[in-house]
Length: 199
Image 1 (spheres, rainbow, N blue to C red):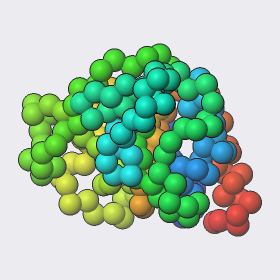
Image 2: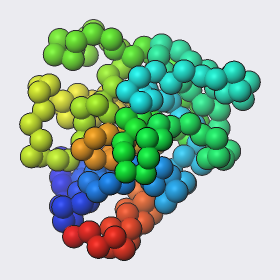
Image 3: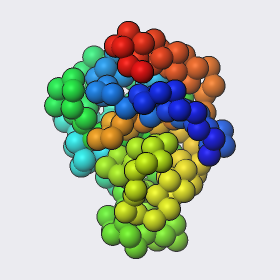
């Protein structure tokens, strides 16, 4: 994976078709969606983690077209970000939400893997949830799970979303294979970093 360190707060990289960024200051899902609503507006979500657990649908969400299968919640086309649920612990606190974003209704992604991460192999099947483990592109972090990044990129390559978004502890992580979308998000993040005086 090629990486570019733009100071302590933004680290960019590429892996195959995907460009990615780790945002390292106190900048979480709420701030990201306010700055870059185009990442999800008009698209579809597969929510694999909400506050480190399952996204349990409300009756209103079911009526609106959300469905749940194998521990994954699938949205209808996101028309507005108003009412979109994600963990809101505060503007300075991660929510441990993980979203795969699609331009079309996503296929079933299977079941969330419930076993021991240390024993997981692709042959076991199931979708791994990475938000509690993963801070993309932060080489100084010593992961306890062997080959974590390789497993992540293998899974993203198999699922092939337009974008991936995770609001974790070490960093907010965004990856996309939509070059124009990623360029727009990257520019907004650079401006936001400069405005906050981040190096």
